[in-house]
Image (cartoon, rainbow, N blue to C red; front, top):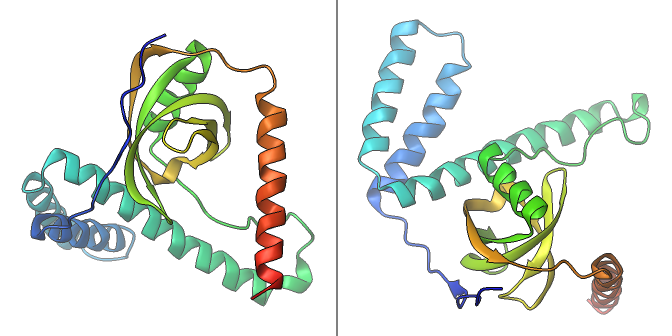
Length: 202
């Protein structure tokens, strides 16, 4: 097995080019789905391509991921509003709790890591830690989530594919522990108990 490089925390810096690209991308997504003249769509597309080319490649990855999550949040809000309006017509499980989309190439790379038991390097944005780079041993793919051992946190973690900014397969191999599911489930129970205890005291 290869040696795991040190994981690092990254400080996000949004420059003008990134903001302009995000603005152009969101605007184009709205215009493209609206009933407007093709000439207007073409103009917004031209502005989008101009803003995209002015934005550095690594910055574009962060902007693309952010725009995708903004869209997901919007659709989740719509689902919640529909659920509130038609709650009396719904049965348990009829409506999803949240709307999540992701870059399918990221999910495929994770699945390759699971199958080959090779570590992946994630550029990941979490709600608590912000943007980080971390080495992860991918254990399982589960819908919109990946489960694996995080060398940054030194424990098994669940990763949402919509929060993956970039993923790279590495030549580093690992052995998946036989008891990883039991360890992960026990870890989940501990976190649930800690959350419930915190909620009772606040």
